[in-house]
Image 1 (spheres, rainbow, N blue to C red):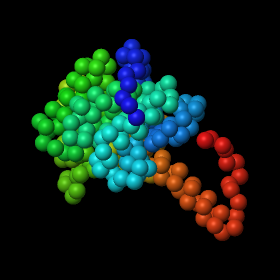
Image 2: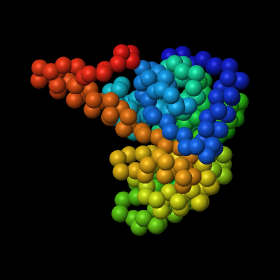
Image 3: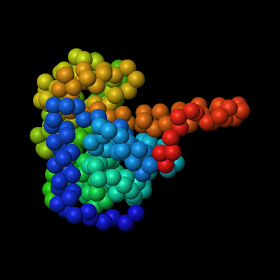
Length: 265
C-alpha cells in the first residue's frame, strides 16, 4: 500500500478523539483487529469507539512469527488498510518500532494511524525513554498529538524475580515514559487488584492500559479502579480461529454450518 497523508486536520482530530477516549472515566475497550474484514466487523458494533491492531495477529495472518519478524513495510501496509477501512481512530501495535520507533511512527501516521503501542522490551531505561521520546517527537513533526501507549515488559520478562521489585520497575519505567509525553502506560500481564491499584496510584487515573486475558479482572472493576484502556491482543484472533476450527471439525464429521452464522464479509 502506498503511504498517503490523510488531511492533517483529519488526523489531528482523530488523535484528539483517541486521547479523549483514554482520558474519559468510562474505560476504553479496544477489541483488537488484524485485517480489513475484522476491523469492519468490530467497527460496526454498537459501543466501538476506536480500533487497535494486534501485531501478533497481523504477523500470524501473513505467515510470520511474532516478535518483529514481519518486515516494517508489510506491517505499515496492513495497518494502513485497516485505517482506510474505518472513520474511527486507529491505534497500531508497532512492537518495539522495528529498529527506529520514530520512523515507524512517522510512516504509520502517513497511512492514517493516530496512536501506537511501543514496547520497551526492558532495554536500559535511558534507551527506552529515548525511544518513547522519539515517538512523541515524530508525532509533533507530523502535526499530530500522537497517542503513545508506552508498553513496559516488566511483568512479561519478570522471570522468578520478587513481584514487588517487578512492580517497582513497572512504576519507574511508566512514570519516565509519561514524563516524556506518553499518553498512557501499557503493562501487559495477568494483573491482580493490588498491582492495578499500585500502578494507577503511581501513574494517575486513566493512565494505565491493560490487556485482558483469561483470568483477568472484569472490565467494570478495572473501570472502578481507574484504568484507562483494555485491549485483548492476539486473543481475539484466537477466538475467531477457535470458532473456525470447531466449525471445520463439525463439517468434516458430516455436520452442518453453525446456526446463526452471519454474512459479515
